Amino acid sequence: MVGGLAIGLAASDRGPTLIRTAAVEAAVSQGLVRRNTPAPGAHYPGCNAARAAGVAPLYAGEPGYRPEMDGDGDGIACEPYRGLR
Image: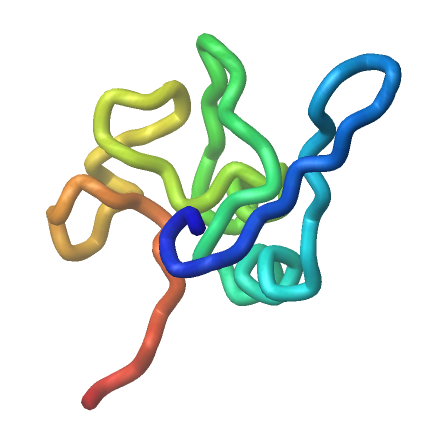
């Protein structure tokens, strides 16, 4: 389990292959897990662009992360908004 989500591996003639389960796809669609990894030197003008590229959330030290995109200053930019509790 990764982050509370089950991720399966399947054997093929090319070796293990990651299988995206319905739980993983749901987490991606909610912005909890990203679909892609930011490329070296990546720059996103804002969170909408990072989300469209499938790289949100961005973490401090990763390509594309900028403090201006991290509204609460916790080192995670473009994280999903959960509303007030």
